[in-house]
Image (cartoon, rainbow over all chains, first blue to last red; front, top):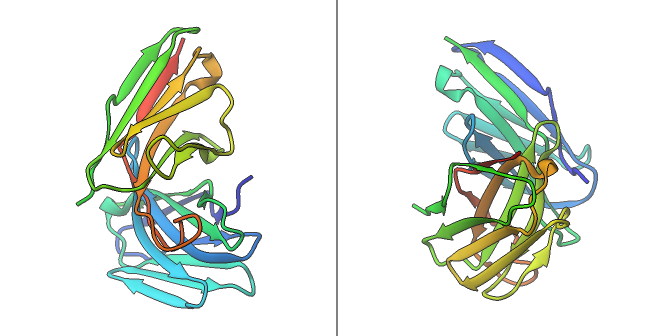
Length: 111
Length: 119
């Protein structure tokens, strides 16, 4: 069963705007990861945040994690047309089971 | 950079055919995975392997088998392809780390995917 659920399913913004995607999950986790997938290609790892971390930055990416609400958000600042892709969260549960992916958010950045 | 190579980008097969999807990684990773990706269903794990000749069922193993004879190569086999196996197939690898499952804090490296159509 899916552990992570992304919200919204689709997001369309203008270049230069910020994009925020959310992920909710159901069980306790060791870490949460975000991946990006360009159309018709494989996934690329973006960032990992551990359960004892609240916020992490990588370039224009900012990830937050709220374990009390079992949710995470991915913020892309100053978006570019090249950021157009699907974004997936993936959770590693404390039970030791495999990494579980959500269904993704389709981000479209219009030039 | 880690490279995960899937042998075919697009594949068209007929119902009942035996299909082999090959995946090779070049970074000596212990763990390898096969996922399928379908619209509205996200990524679902078919099989994974922690080591040579070892395999574990994922969430949807029915209709599939795998082979890992060498550390760098992980093959997915559709014994008798069916139309409901039309999908994007993604291979991934990761490093073993520490104790437990090896998934602790480890990121996956994906291949570019194989779009399989079964007619």
